[in-house]
Amino acid sequence: MNGTPPRIDAAERLAGLPSLEDSAGKALASTALIVDATMKAWAAYVVANNVPDAQQAKAKRAYEEYQAAIQAAQEAYAAVTGTAGESVWNDATAALLASSGALIGLISQGSAKAGMKSLLRDFITPKLSALAPYFSIRAVRAELKAARCPLEPATLNSYLHELAEAHFIYDAGRGWYSSLATPFTLNREPVSSLVQKLNQTFPLLEFSCWSTQQISSYGHHLLAKFVTFVHTERDTMLSVVEFLRDAGYDAHLNPRGVAAAQFAVRDRTVVVRPKVTTQPVEDHFVTIEGLLVELLFEHRSLHLMDTREYFQTFTNLTRQARISMARLLDYARQRELAINGLLESINAGFCDNPVLIDPQ
Image (tube, rainbow, N blue to C red; front, side, top):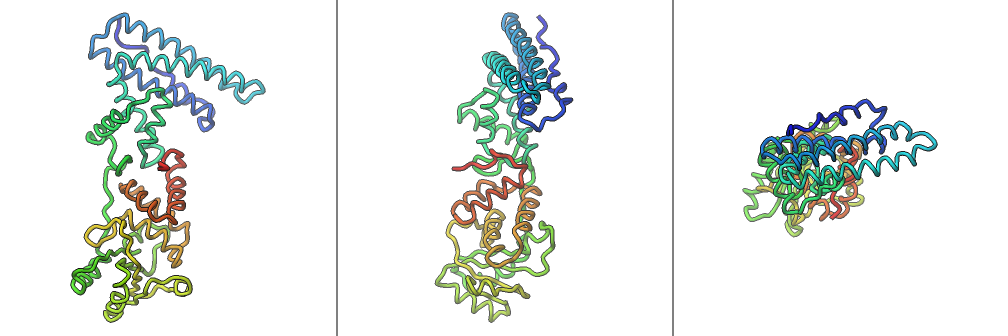
């Protein structure tokens, strides 16, 4: 028997459907693409492993049943907007899911490892990457469940690690992946001199710095003036403010309430805030993940920019190069007031992907 299965053209035929934006069209397209990836993996497996004729015959019969089911589903799709369309569609989609599940299950028995890796590499991760520049392992599990191909957690972690090692996808922190190959490099120059001065004057001081100038090029509107923030221990904040004022800075001591309402950005403006112990910091420089969370607070409390501008900055920056989404979300969860707005920003900015955010 010829080891090459029939040409898979269901996915290509579906490209001519009137609309794939509704749920029926998406269900058809998703099923067709998953089966297509599975059959391509099966063809490679047959060639490489001398699969017995009897096993190939079973796969061929299952595929023929699937072809009949998807043809019926396509015809039902054409009637889905009619008065009897819902009933016809429900019957057809049930048959389609049964036949595609049986086909994938049968093939998985003979080529489980190769087929699952191919499904992840050639369909699931490209699909998620097309939806958003970041996706979670939870999103991958959801796709596997939809394909009726669940994997044990340890096995899935291993396969995703292999894909990352081979640069099909890229690590974006614990349980997160990205299609962006280049890691984000935050420009430290705007705060380097201040960090150096504080280190020289307070060699034992625990502090961190960031500035709106570091991310000014990612907004829709360029900022005319910038604010630098110094986070340090509460009992040393006054000493730091006095030093900064003596050094010619427009320094503000933790402005809240009336002081925040009256705050204005001038030349060399610095705001001194209490340091959060879990803030992501490297050598006194707040990381890009920490900066994005801090900016979410400060753009509101000090009226640095409107909310739309913040979200635009966030989206532009995180699509430009890869950040650690896990680190960002961990810190946002610890800053309780920030989490809702930030998660909404991520969901809205990354193609409205409902499985992008892990709730835990």
